[in-house]
Length: 328
Image 1 (cartoon, rainbow, N blue to C red):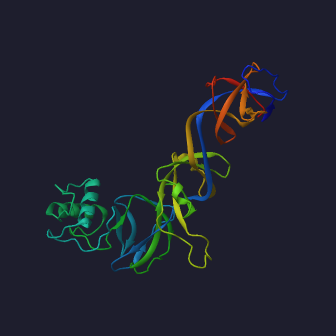
Image 2: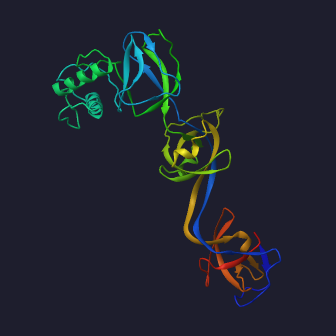
Image 3: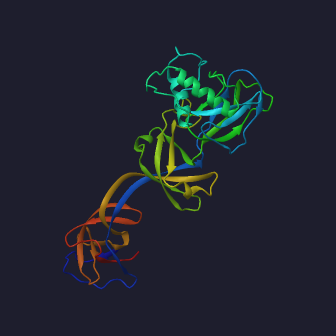
């Protein structure tokens, strides 16, 4: 920042020897806060087996499991994956049964290419058409083609998953914790103090700063509701919530398996404002600021947001592209 004796736009003064000219920019300026986070595949989810029998085959860490594909084997029979939100909680074996578990089975069979007939969106029945489709599918994947489905014969996941860890061993009883899975997409998990999480909105644009300092555009995709830490003695630190950040382009973090990163969250944004480097501001003796154009004239300005080395300016005679003198 340089100093001037007068504030009149008609006054001319030679620019300092170290000065250079830059164009006034129209841009978005934002102020925000930086949070530490961890890049990985997100929080793991435990997969529990059900029913009877012994585990005879397990996946490898890093395997991607898709719809209709076997996740593990029990008594040398595959246990495939269905997508949905409701696990199988009973044996499906008759047309009197109806509910969300029937809807999951019908939707998956249809997605896998099997005709299930007309299925209502709410409380569908386990119709003969669904049973017939199930029988065909069972035969195709190596299961006994009974046209019925019992608890533990399929695993219901929310979508494609990556095997994160395998805790069971071959020969273990299937009932119990077998393995854990995560999302297939890399995300940043970011613990945020409960008193600060209100400024972070689901869907908001943020910037991930990689360990090599490269910025990565991203969005907030989940703001947790479960509080970790806190308590009367505060021995585990202040209460925190977990915020999940997803890169806009997965390829921008494809070379990183896991890493500590910083996440920049904008808490205030001024869009489409005129801005110059802070070094272009001239402090006037009578108070306030001006910018000096290349012809030596001073133009009084009102300042707004300061961010990223830039300052928002407004005033008469200012326009995008106007050349002004700056020391930085």
